[in-house]
Length: 109
Image 1: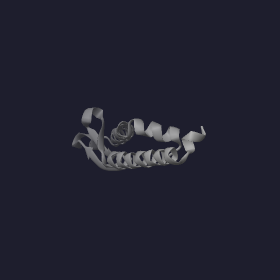
Image 2: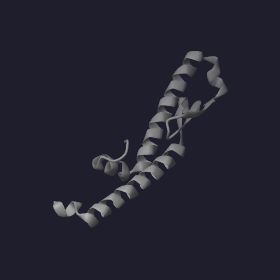
Image 3: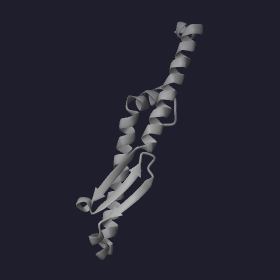
Image 4: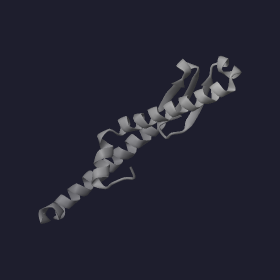
């Protein structure tokens, strides 16, 4: 066990941890920029979200404007769908890095 923390091994471990942190930061950046579209009502309402969980666009089919209650339900459903897809996209982008960082006690995920 002492050999693990001796000079060279500790330096190698730190270098690997730093490389892993860099890869994690790059993956987080890619995931944050990624956009996904959630839909409801067979595409009557579409909501675009980023991997950073920001809603950037809402598209409404004009037919939905005649029924406000239906429109509210569809916007809610489409938003929830977009956010779910955004979370899934982030998880896919991070892949095994997220698990490695969490198990190593590194990073904020």
